[in-house]
Length: 612
Image 1 (cartoon, rainbow, N blue to C red):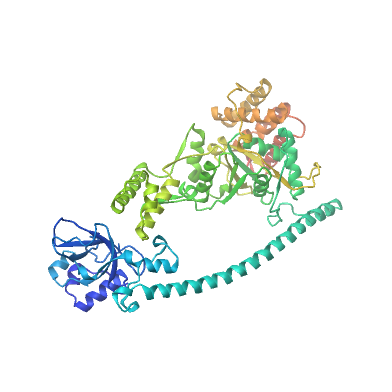
Image 2 (image 1 turned 135 degrees about the vertical axis):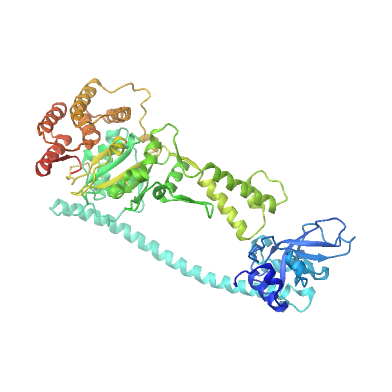
C-alpha cells in the first residue's frame, strides 16, 4: 500500500493517477463498493451511500485515505427530486466514479455514481443458494467484477459457479485430511493404552528393585505420571487423609516424610502464603504438583524471573494504546479460580527469591490481609471510557434498541476490523475489570532454593507466610496401596474457621510466649497478624490430633525462627534459646535440629541465620 497523501495533493493528480491511488489505498480490485442508502434531506435531488464495504475483501472501509482528512467515505448519487428509488438503509452495490471538480475533492466529496449504476443486493440471493450459505456467513458479500459477467442480469452467476467449484474441491481435500487424522487418532489411542500398561509395570518393577536395595532419584521431574486417575474414597478424618496422601505419593515413586506433608497440609488450611525452602533437588516443586494431583486441585507453576521489579510482572498490565488489559498466567489463574469456587487452586511461584519479593508481590500480600480486599489492575476511569466508546460504536452502527452491549455486538451484521476490535475490547474488559478480589480457593506457594548466597526473606514476607523447610526426605514405611488415584476434595475442606475459637490452649500460649521473650533479645517483635496465624494453625492441628509439643515445634520452625538473621557476639543467647525450645518440645525436635545447624554455621561465619 502506498503512503497517504494530502487531499490537496490528490486534487493535483491526473485522472489516471487518482484512480490508481484510490484503488491502492482502499485495496479495491475495481470501482465497486457495497453500502447503505441514506437520505440526508427530504425531496432533494440526491442521496448518499455510506457504511461502505469492500466487496472483494468483505472489510468495512475505515482506512485512512488521506493523511489530513478523516471524514468517513460516502458515495454521492443524483436522482429526481420527487423520486425515492430505494428505501433508507437499503443495501446496494454501486459502480464508482471519481469527482472531477477540485473544489469538491478538497471538501472530501471524491466518489459519485449514477442511479443507473446502483443495484440492490437482494437480487444476489441466487449466489448464496448455489453455495449453500447465508449472507451472514460470507465474508465477501458480492463479487460484482465486470470480468465475471456479460450483462447486468447475470452478473452474479459466473462468480457463484466459481465459488461452488472451489468449495467442492476444498471439501474433497478436507475429507482426505479428516480420514488421515482419524487414522492417526486411532494409532495414538492404541499407543496410549500400551503406555498405561508400561507405566503400571514400571511402578511394580521399581518397588521390587527398591526392596532389593536399589536407590532411584525420586524427585526427578522426568517421571512418568498417570494420565487418568480414578477417584478414591475420601478419608473420614484429617489424619487418615494425611496417611492416604503419603501412600499415594509413595506408589507414584515420591517419598516424603509424614511431618513434611503434615506441615504443608496444615499451612494450606490457614489460607496464608507458603514458602517451601531448601536445597536444590529436594522436591519442592514436585510436592506441589503431586499434592495437587492427589487432592484433585488445579495447579499453575510460574517461574519467577530475576528481572521482575513490580506487580505488572506478576499480574500483567493495561495497554493504553490498544485499550486492552494484557494478562499474565497468574492473573488468569485467579480469574479461573473465581469462576470455579469449589475447586482448589495452587499457584506456585517457582524460585520466589530470584527477584526481590516485595517488589512484585507486595500488593498481593497486603490485599490478602484485608477483609474484602481487592487488587487494583487499572483505573476505573479507563474502564468507563472503554464502555462509553463501545456504546458509541453500537449507536453508530445499529438503529435497533438493545438491552445490553453483548446483545448489541452480536446483532450488528458486520465483518470489519472495527467490529472485531470492539468485540475484543468488550470481552477483555468484561474479564479483566479494574478491581479483582483474591478468591478464597487459591493457595499461593513459593519455592526457594537455599544455598550459601541466599538472601534472607524480609520480616514483611515472613510475617505473612508459613516457611516450611524441605530437606532430603527419609523413606518411611507407609500403608501399601495398589491403585493410583486421587481424592475428590473441595476447596472448603482446606478452610479453617476460627470464629467460634476464642483462643489457643494455655499450654501452647505459655510455650510460645516464653520463646518470644527469648527472641525479643534479637529485637524481634510480633503483631496481631502473627497471633491470627497461630490461632489458625492451632485449630487445624487440633483437627489433625497434634499434641501441644508438636504444635510448639511446628510454629517455632515455621513462624518464629525464620526471623533470625543476625551477627551476634554472645553465644549464650543461642544456648538459652535452645534450652527454652527443648523444654517445651518433644524428642527429636525439628526446630532444635534447625537451631543446631544454625549454631554450627554461626561458629564458622559469625552469622546466626535461619537462611544460612
